[in-house]
View (cartoon, one colour):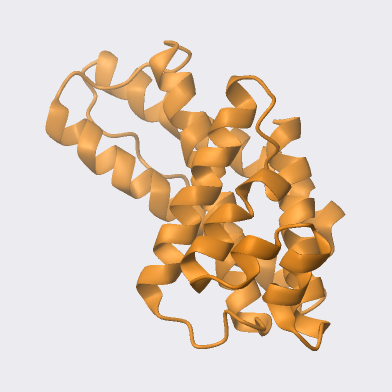
Length: 191
């Protein structure tokens, strides 16, 4: 979990610098001694930043952070943002949001793989639950980014990552327990 928080802070820092540097993300890459990437395609540059955002010398959590970042880069490139050279507020929000969503989702998948969460036995229920969970996490991330405003204070965002994970695991536990008891999907409580 610490690796996700640290990576979020590093990513926010890189993107913030790129938004204000006259040379944008390419100048930031040069400053980070990634000159070869700075002159290449923008997709390669963002993918190459993985070693800055998520250093390669770590454990499984670090590997999940790297995977979450690379998935976010693929998603960002697929959306066709026009300001990746010098990212604006909306692009920064999108990149951070996708990274955080992917990081939390991968943590949940890891918890499921380690039998920390009980899932329904029906594959259709599991598929629906998985998509609903990713949508839930995405919604939580978007809400946190809205609350953060344009400044994206890294400490607020990194604290939110653990909160999203805990909320999602609670939902999964409730759904899995209900399915295991033969009750079907858990009813949502009114707040």
